[in-house]
Amino acid sequence: MSKRKRKVVTRNDVARKAQVSPSAVSLVLNNTPGVRISKQTRARILAAANELGYRPSAIARAVSTGRTHTIGVLLCNTDQIFEPYTAFLLQGIWPTLREHQYRLTIDALTKDRDIAIFCREHAADGVIIIAPPDNVTGVDLIIDQGYPAVSVGSELAPEVDYVDLDNSHAAYLATSYLIRMGHRRIAHLTGDIHMSSGRERLWGYRRALAEAGIEFDPNIVIESYYGEREKSITHARELLSRRHDHSYTAVFAGSDEIAGSFVEAAQEIGLGIPEDISVIGINGFPQQTTIVDRSIKLLSTIRQPFLEIGSRAARLVLQRLNEKETPRAQKLLLRGELVEGHTVRRLSS
Image (cartoon, rainbow, N blue to C red; front, side, top):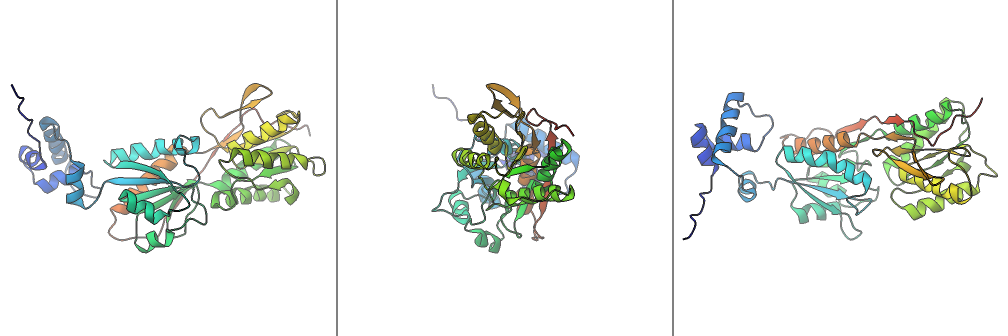
């Protein structure tokens, strides 16, 4: 005996049940912002949809709204979505998009593709671009077309919305902490200087030195890179090789990963952390640790508000989608928090 096919519930069915127009049902079920529908009517529509077992069709919604209800996330500095920086940002991005009934598509930027190609290939309504370098291509096209885009981790262009850690302040906070702990000779392993975040962290470091009356010494500043462990270890070894001629007691690293590379390189030549050299980084992944003398120690760092950064970026790209006029680009910088771990020691005065 064949089973009867279950009748597909449409928005018209929900409208009849709730005694409202189909357009009102669409506005409520699409969670369209800025729409004046009373709480009672909204509750009646949601109750009717739930009672009838309504399940929205992605295809039907795309046809009716002219949108795919998909937001792209483009990774520029890594192709590893489970790399901690990306993973923690996604924990803020994904729930916010899901709350507004948007799907998420993720891809990595390669040398033969640009941002505009990514947007066309994925038919995304908007894009969140993570850690874009200065030389990324396709930016002019998305600006000219008014395509909803938000950059995170580095500023893409003044005309594009930007949400990030206040990198300059975070670096200032880290360097000032080392100074309060009695350090006057503070080296710096930078992040990517071809990204705005790396430059801003260098500026914050220099500002803290200047305010404390400490002269900037370019001999103990070496450019490194985010997410490239082998290169950062090489740069850490180079910085350590300068320690004899340009003595320093502490290192501010441009990220926790770079800090970890420095710790590893220091231990290769028998130096203790923080007994011989103090180290502080930036990122502050939950329970960020580093291996020091075969034991696990909590890394001193500046913790980023990853979930809030991700959520703000998602809300901003959705806001752009629903704005009839395009206002000036927004720049939202969130403050980091000092985590006093076990890799910085106080020097006796």
